[in-house]
Amino acid sequence: MVKSALSVLLVLVAISSTFAAKYIPKSGKRVPQTLSRGWGDQLIWAQTYEEGLYWSRSKNKPLLVIFHLEDCPHSQALKKVFSEDNEVQKVLDEDFIVLNLVYETTDKHLSPDGQYVPRLLFVDPSMTVRADITGRYANRMYAYEPSDIKLLVGNMQKAKKLLKSEL
Image (tube, rainbow, N blue to C red; front, side, top):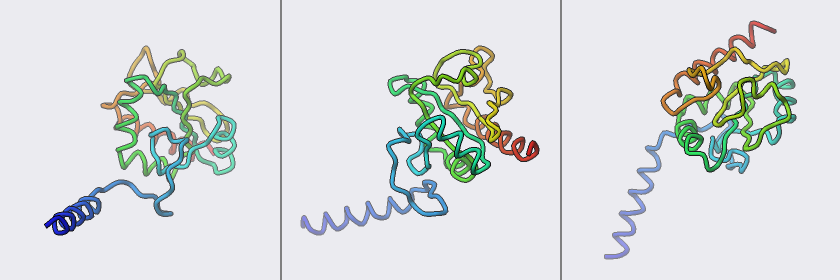
């Protein structure tokens, strides 16, 4: 009786895991990196701002810098939606260099309207911070909430299109 119950349980787990439609990169499932900090385990993350700028320039892709704090409820809420959105994960994997930071950098251009979290900024391969690509808030121009995920996707598309037309 116990063996049959375990067999049925194993089959149910196997079936339920096959229906989970999580984004998997073209190169196959990757080993999760601790650098993701939960923002997208299947993405390749830059370790430092300098490394992100180097990858951005050498691969000719825009850099997305995410400022957040581990204990901030707003950061946690955005992280949950961000990491579960297949469209966001796919676009980032294919077209962006990504970096998430839990500390501020010395580059004042990455805090054009102050230091707050969560804050998402785009940097193009020419190392120009894209201050023109903003969220929907006037007092926190680079902040996004979980309900703003579609706006973020649109801004990611803007960063890609403008990048191609500028070069």
